[in-house]
Image 1 (cartoon, rainbow, N blue to C red):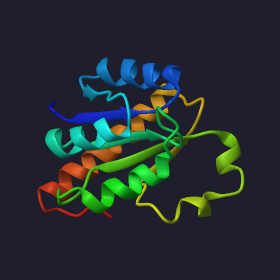
Image 2: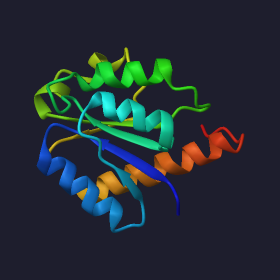
Image 3: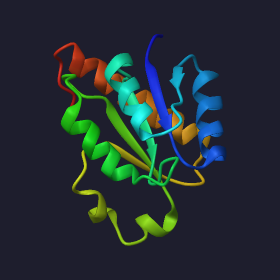
Image 4: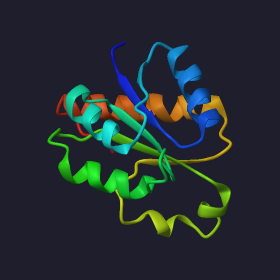
Length: 136
């Protein structure tokens, strides 16, 4: 399996947990130090899935980052996006996310198997889109 996953979160424990479970299942991981480096890696490495925290290293807003990536990435289709959020952000409902093209949301602290399940489903959907077979 050669599906690259980019993980970017200001929480080192969440990043470590995501990297451990995904690497143990054969995924190739990119872990840039900040949003600018992440954008460069997305453009050069073309990850299938981007996992971003609601806050990025350096204090940048994760949802703004996802929106910026979706606007500038010349990949068709773009990578899938999973946002890791704190319970307080999702408590009011998912309406706060409508401005960004996020595929899945996972509340921290997250269950590692649930994250793996999200990545598998999203990777399969991205693969189908890249092969010209849209997935509902």
